[in-house]
Image 1 (spheres, helix red, strand yellow):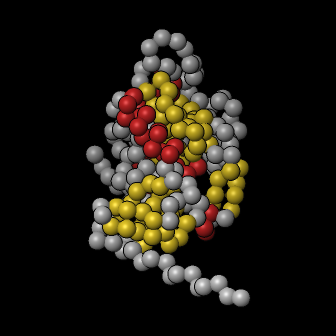
Image 2 (tube, rainbow, N blue to C red; image 1 turned 90 degrees about the horizontal axis):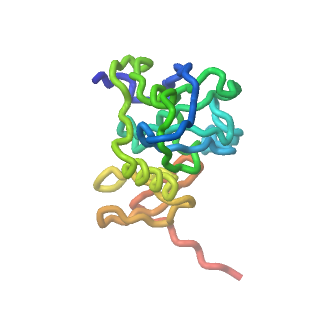
Image 3 (spheres, helix red, strand yellow; image 1 turned 90 degrees about the vertical axis):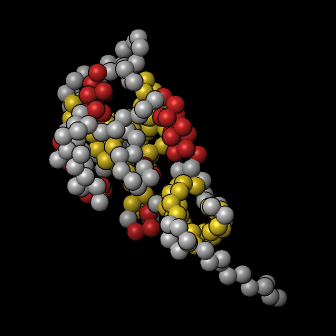
Length: 209
């Protein structure tokens, strides 16, 4: 499998649409997938201080089908399939890459629609790959990951320890984090991520007066 293009997955998007009709149907699902909604407000810019309604390609509250992480970034950037903003479903399902921080209400649903399955499983030709993306191996895997993304939505990093640390934490993040017996202290936090350090924050000066 070719791996070109994974160095900066934010730089590309998968925008090919599936023209099949979406029918939620009855009967046995063809598989299971994590589903989420686009956040009502999403943070952009330096420090995440610029707020927008919805995301660039999806309206606020839109439902999207979420594939498992495809590269080693811990799931910060995810491939999703949903109805593109402004189309009202007239153009089928578009497949895009989106930041996980722009998604909320992670849960698992069965895939009953052939159009949804085609949109998710189609080869990644937009990346120059001739292979399909990785799908969820089981309902259990999807449910465990969805629960982790719900309960620990913030990506935490530390690069000054004996080992590079990347994990997920609660929102707001804890002031201290223990990893492999090492204690890290919260140094910086914004809408995008939490940064930890081995250096404890300086003590607050005693109150005067």
